[in-house]
Length: 149
Image (cartoon, rainbow, N blue to C red; front, side):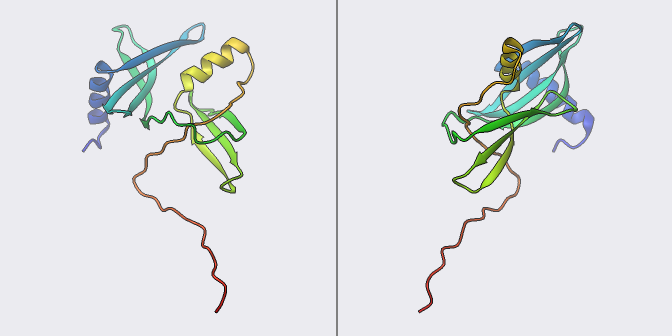
């Protein structure tokens, strides 16, 4: 198990060398943000974000697991907000079919950042493809009431 920070850093260094995709964008005059994704299984992996150091290695600032989904799961109106502490974004879907608002992390923050930089305004989201990873969870389904007999 990777529980100590040094073990996690060593694992992330190893994963960054096996990245299946990498992308860097200019945030400001002195800062580049780089993304590296390493697949552990088809469509499942670890996304790592940070800056490249002098040795062209990624200094990982944050990371998270991801699972890919190409199927459009919602065409509801979606708003996107940047998190204050790092270059991540949260999406908010007002999904009327389910009766709740869904809040989620964007799995393509680099693409979103590039589009907002080009247009200099928020990007209109046409659809969302939701996927999820969890250690524990419960699925709550509505109960269909039967008339009393």
